[in-house]
Length: 112
Length: 172
Length: 88
Image (cartoon, rainbow over all chains, first blue to last red; front, side, top):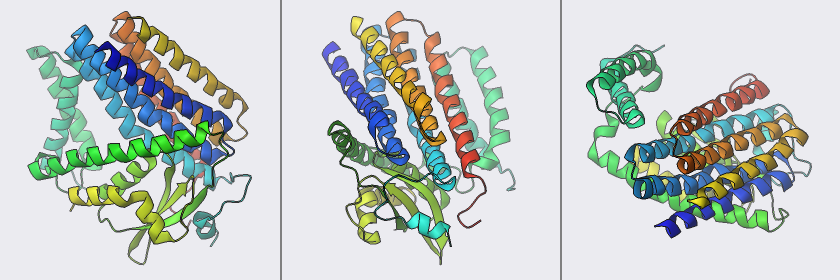
């Protein structure tokens, strides 16, 4: 069981590392948002799954496990709303990528 | 502002009470009465913002089954997209080709559209930026990290193909 | 179990990495994205540390951290966007 927990935590850490690396190195603001979504999906899911298994089977405490699962549900359902608000706000406040985008329907429609 | 309806209050109350029980995990009478009072207050205040259509939607077995099926579909898409973005990041962040596409959506109803928009945002690589209605059709503006297809219909099929089918099965 | 502490420290380290983008980011959107990610990472680290030390109080703090992290993101997002609807 401990090996399974370790593997889950390691998978979560790898995706969180990918998100953090993308956050530092991606070329423009919108691509950084895309990379940071990696953290809040599989990074969190790995930690939640590993932590819940640890709480259920090693600690033997059902209350802790259920609470961890609830935290995971909250983060997964709430986080896209924040990402959506930031993306829309950033585009409307005039932030554009350095390189020209290949196809930009929003910029075309917003200027009409 | 819509009027508060009785079934909406009841279903919101059930949801809040289940949340209370799961968070405290303490089944003594005192805790449960306190939880009931707090959930009732929250339900009276929040139900008119929360539920506009069928209040007892979640209690139908067929819909619940479709929701559980959708979770698995969504997890598969999520893992696929995550691996894709992680590959791009570890490959040096040069392999990106961002763009914003306008994609038509066939789903009806506020809940279904909100759920599809959140699912698209949650998959790495795509973010829903805005929703517009033109000539009776709904369009999403989606920021896409790698524009593989410039035709709008085909791009929509690539981005949300299986997700839209799953959600359509839940909210038909 | 020692791995929990190691992974908690690793997640906290990732949060510190995000701090760099928070300090440097050329646009407000960059700073907010970095803040949002830090929030989630700190929440993960808190869950793991709570399991390691066996104290339940950290889980409650993690819930509050996850909930209030969204409020400020929403606030800044709405402020940046201004107005409502596509065609003002």
